Image 1 (tube, rainbow, N blue to C red):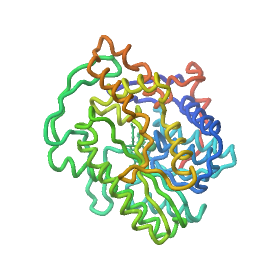
Image 2 (image 1 turned 135 degrees about the vertical axis):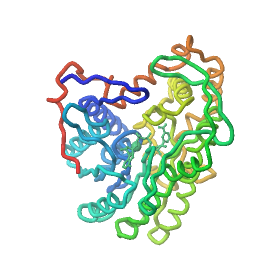
Image 3 (image 1 turned 45 degrees about the vertical axis):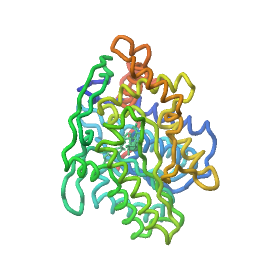
Image 4 (image 1 turned 90 degrees about the vertical axis):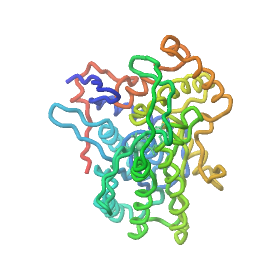
Length: 396
Ligand code: NAD
Ligand code: NA
């Protein structure tokens, strides 16, 4: 079977197993090329199948020879339907980890549920005893709170007033004006319930209670800030409230881990093309201009470069972990550089449908988007039969 991208709006309905495998291999090669990291040896990654979470799992395994357990929510392949990209990524990751003699097991299910937390804790007890690093990298539009049974849906809206600005449809390159209506009160609550820190704290509490956190265990969750251009729809919008909550939760988790000398961090990461960020109006135009400027300045990074740098130059550099005045690790430092933001702001003023492919990196945006689904990956023969090439391991 030949697998091609099939788009519906901002999502791609198909994924390519061989492309996903090659993309995982490329990330592994990158981590190896940067040398060993004196990091954690037993690692749990919650949200391990794509984006920053997958990069974290790869960096732990191939930078520090760590045993990893990955938790994610992905669709396996079915008759006439490809799996979701994260499923292929994880199958490929496990195959490569096992080849390298590294422990790697995965749990596919709803991380927000008590069941998946219990299942994960049991697996840690049975196979690893304890973990010393827990990466929390979930991105989801919906969460059912296991205590209340209420299902919350997150929204990406400004707060207080309508926000109007430019955006781009990255498929067509058309730049247009959009207006986003402000949130209603329970939009904020619901978004905080899904993307805030409550579930992170629940994971840490359950693990501590079960005795599966090693002395000195560290946990890291990922956040975003971004420039004033995107503030109304991001950092000062509903999602920003959730990130404020997540960042505050790091302090309460650290307090709760005092007796085991544990510590919770938030790392603020760079804007990157993901399924989620492609669906937020205004952001794709910002990212396409940002990519252009950062590539020109030689400081562009993808998820693997970001996380490798987080580990090697922040978490495991030796000594105190450097943080900003709010206690956050910053690996968005290059994105936020004054000269970079100045240039992006100038380009933003000028951007039109006619000039965007020149002044912005639409091509790079699209490539990254296709790459998420295993398409347009260097070194893959897309004319070959995809089925024969899948090295699929069973995932629990
Ligand atoms: P992603 O969509 O690539 O990854 C999300 C992961 O969560 C996947 O492994 C998915 O399977 C898993 N997941 C989703 N719902 C789940 C559920 N119910 N149960 C178990 N697993 C579930 O997202 P990403 O872009 O890597 O984002 C990860 C974190 O990084 C988020 O907190 C995000 O806000 C943050 N971040 C993203 C950006 C960006 O530009 N993309 C920038 C900075 C920070
Ligand atoms: Na992730």
